[in-house]
Length: 253
Image (tube, rainbow, N blue to C red; front, side):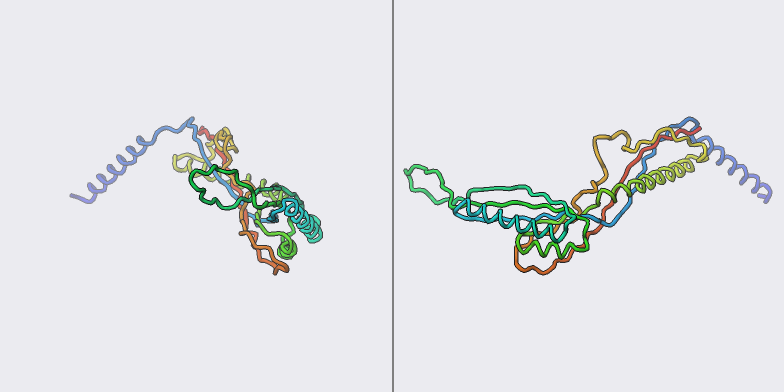
């Protein structure tokens, strides 16, 4: 076979392939495309909620309650001195009877109602603060009277509001990038895409929230036994990730 004939056949096959490919692509004019997109921002936690507790047990209910009241007052005063800007809230005051362990009863004997042998009384104290630099010193001081029940790091309201603009911008940028990629995959010019609808709630899914709450409990410390005096503990606040989802409806000209 001559060289010229080979070139003619190659050109014919190539043209046939391009024509078949062009026929295989469906028309996209007027097509409505649903485009999901996501964005997130990260920020170091700048707020902590500390939970302290006190619990006493005594045969005399009034005596147990009195010791709880005194210790809670002392712990609250210490906390106010260490961190005057902290927001304090007492909660969960409880009083429970303490019963002896069940003893096997002789056969035929009537079951007698159990009598408490003592009382367990306790209360919780929550403190919310952005003074993380002084946190170890504050906690150690309060631990001389109260027990440390938990630490919950998160973002303050002011920081959350500042990050909201960044989160929206990151999500919208991801949406435009995806629209461009989809247009190229369809063989269309991105300039032909007209953004019809932008749903920042995530395709009308208003009942669910895919982003973690800024006040979520990002880190919890295990309970620590009461001691006096107490060495300063060490804490790392970590960071919080704020997510956002958006769905755009794009129509091609």
